[in-house]
Image (cartoon, helix red, strand yellow):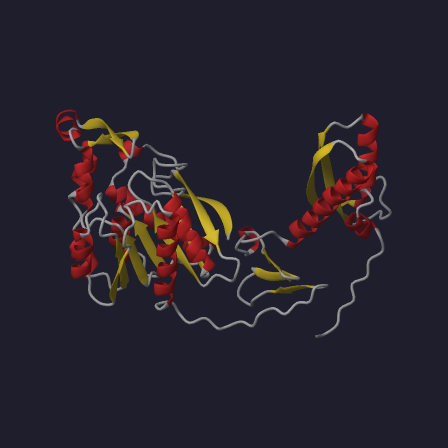
Length: 403
């Protein structure tokens, strides 16, 4: 699974932080994940569910709601309506940069928000909730003794999940504005309700209420002995696998692509006609190459020149490790940074060409170890002997034939 850190703006212009979990194989569909109340995108259950779905070919965007995790904003200024708005901003981001989400899923209050937002996401064909309350007002009981203070002062400091938060009266007022049974009844999308009978935060009765309000197709899966946060790896991974298997029933059938056949001594790349995302096989190893969004790609992998720079960097560190081991040098590790660009030939004093542009790789080498100045100088000389370096400086012929 690949992880891409992404950012996008909400309706208030604040930056929301997200992670896009991508499968190693071509993406079958995109899903949008909403975390639980006062949680974050990094909750273990969210990570495991995304991992399991990515293993099934579904890319998942999980993000921090306004004022939580790494997203901008003040939690005290948020409410259930702003969470729904954040979800719609995330869906718009996916549609603009990748593909509109076909699957919406949410954990706890995040699932309730997903149900409320679903009508405004026409691309979604499947919606799933995990341990979600059947009414947004369910979270009001978590404020306990602070209710009186909220009524008197208009705000209160409360502990939620062991962490302090400031909550304003408007949060409670907003909860009552939403009629979730009506939203569920008019969903017109496949619904999966997942809940644990032993959930002591959101009782199983909530799942029954949502299931009763929904029209077919609807499904229910019991999470058996799981707790509310799905803190067991087995429970969250199971939930992710079931979600992926269930959702694929409602996704468009994709044309099957044949497996890339590759021998041990070759590299094979295949690019579909509708994107730059390229599947690469090097022996038994799988890679993905792509182009930035600025040139029409989806930025799901390194560019071809990034891969070439990576080859030079990796070859350099391996060559230096081999030399250091042979000479028994006190070297713990070597780090090589490579950047690639094009420069005008007239700006290069030691280049053979005197016109046009040439490719330039800048290589920066650093050592972690107890090396003398003389040993460091020799190591820098050895860097130029790495096979990829010599290939780049040597005469190269690429001969193309039709397969």
